[in-house]
Image (cartoon, rainbow, N blue to C red; front, top):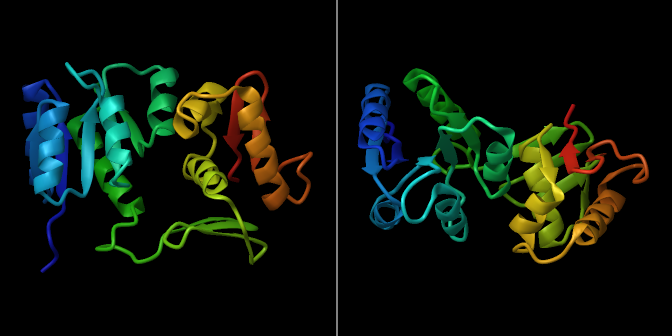
Length: 228
């Protein structure tokens, strides 16, 4: 018998947390609920959690801050849940390690569907021993942290690999210089810091680094991954 997967719902609005619990349980998930970051961290230490639905605006430690803390120890899928629909929060959430971003106007059924989708994409050992992102001549094996160009393995530094993985997992999203600095350099540095690392990455993976096929400039803002 297949083990039920457990979703942790973190939201200071108890009515929303309980509503999501009902819908997720009805779809065959186990559900834990927490109403602030401290409770969520306690649950994560005591239970095996397969996915987190995380509210952003909470008293005390907010969702972004909690995500950062979780990401220091775990790659568990995290779906941000927010009352705000603007792209700034959405891109920030993805840049700091979120796997998806859901606006609270979404129906509970849609949220359940998004939980299922992110769990299918996750590299949980229960589901798959290998997770590969395939973009034609460029392939990332996330289980082994290997990158292949035209079938040949290329050597990347840890920072280069994490940069490439962020882009490859979120094709078409635009990441600003500030967001990349915040995620990979703790906000220390400037645009030149990002440009140097992107340039080195392009030299290793692009057939023509001057005219990149994958990581392209969005002038005045940052970069996006063109995954087609």
